[in-house]
Image (cartoon, rainbow, N blue to C red; front, side, top):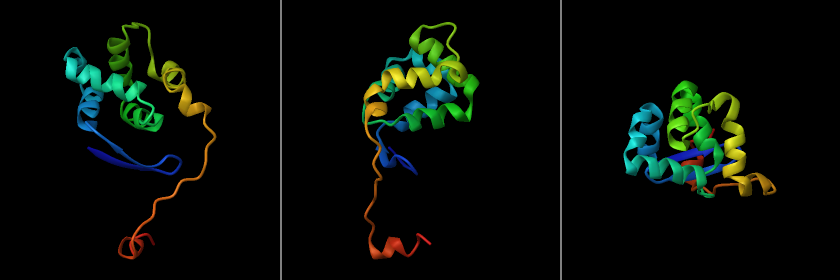
Length: 115
């Protein structure tokens, strides 16, 4: 489980994040069904914002390139060139939504740390 806060997308909880993160580190892992399905789930699940995949890919775009080449069986896929188009296609609903400011209510105890 990962907890990620993003300026635009707000606070999100991501199940099995470790599997996806590991696959971005070692693309050979997508040969295993569990890893392959989890990365595909992150790609196609509307509850996973594109920024999650962007952040993982930005750590090492070369590994992201290898990962998506294997995952999508597209030998010429390049994350730097094709990644945004992939996200916009796979997450079309996300990109079609009107962006509204989000907020996260916090207790007085946690608010003291926000400064």
